[in-house]
Image (tube, rainbow, N blue to C red; front, top):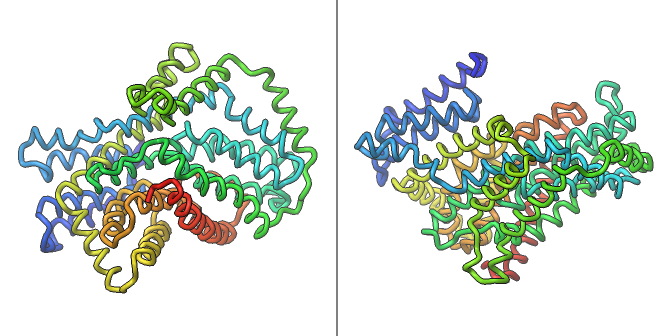
Length: 488
């Protein structure tokens, strides 16, 4: 870590807020001192993440250290360090870490680019067709790319830029509106939707699964298949709407793109026949999806069910044995190891905030304020979700937002009478869909925004419009779909 990685001002602000909560703010009635002190550490950690005081992994190490040293979870030093490190034993964290390593094969083998250019070769006759090609490419690789930033910013965005450039659409020449402006917005707004469709499509999703299980005493444990089936209809509808809505609001100057298909075909020709590594990757992806969806258990009984994280390890093992990925590749996948560290710290803190009763106390405060309005659970949930969703204007990290607010808002919704699985699925979807709002909402946004095709004004306008569209689809169509499935 370089000295430049440490930002003094946001660091001082985070420390000041933590100390203020710890020493200056009285412990509320109904809250223990340890719970309040852990909250102080937690809020300081979240503020440091939002302000980017240090890399998130470094902040996580500091958080683990402070939990262990202050003894807020246990007076025994040996028990306190066990508590502080307990997040590393969470299998869902390792699911995401291993899946990120597996997704490295998409880039190494070139399979991600091949998928993108293949869909453009099929649908690239019109600009809107290219939009759908980008959307389908995102959808195909989403289940096995837990980094939505790597997927939308690292794989799909370079393809989008190469297509825009081939039509002479470049920000530096003032020609963004030819086609690049439109494609950049489609490129971005598909990313939150695919992130909402699979547990393994973005890193914080397993945290949501755990928070829901904790809040319901494990009576609701959302599986990979349950999440994917629940998100299937609203997700596909949102994907179908994005290119159309963006086209209606910001139509491109170039409407027909017959050369795009030829361009994509030339790129595929340059890549040549599918390589050994690509074929192995396709086989591994197919195996992962079949096992994650629980297909063996469906056909042969529960004895053939396989743990989701074990399946991820199986996929990585195959890639190592076949030589598609080397151990050096595994070691170099810094984002995976970084995710395991910071995810473990945040899961640990969220878990103990729940165990110490702080989440229950805060959710009671939220529930009481909404309940006094006198609405039934339907309108109460609308208010709850809207506040949770649009609070993301103040966050630059979905992980920080979810960690800070999800558990309390979910518990408040339960207290207001909302069906547990319906509320969980709705808030889970909102936790990814809120990425639409700003140019700093998630890691993907600064990459695509930074390419210069879209002004900040256009980005925020389109973000708000898509937020309304996506929330309506997820809440109404999704709700009806979940009713048909018997989820509530």
